[in-house]
Length: 173
Image 1 (cartoon, rainbow, N blue to C red):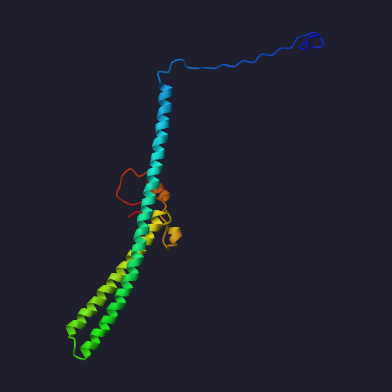
Image 2 (tube, one colour):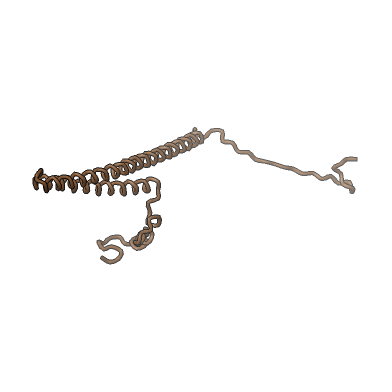
């Protein structure tokens, strides 16, 4: 007996078909698109590498400036202490007649210069710390907990998107 035959003597059959379209000639278009996409991918990878190197360089530079500023602050503290000690000594020498008032004024000027240099070094330390935060992407209003209104570019865009001309700002000034 035929296995495809039904009990009533009929035959069941089925057909499956598939169509495959392969372009015979595309003028190199397909290959060109593949090459173009590969080159675009390579370019994107290079841009990522350049960005990574730029960030790494910025962080390294900021850290170097920070450590240098720390060392300068420490050194200037010692300079101030030495200048204060020298000023005290010059004042005592003036009191016993060994130094002049001009010597005292020069010692005071040295102390003042040391204090100015210390203030400058402390400023450099703060700037370097902010440069580190900026380089690692953490310099923001939220992270610094600043008590200011956060700029929202979407609001500004919505306020001016239909303005074709004019000199006034969105708030009317």
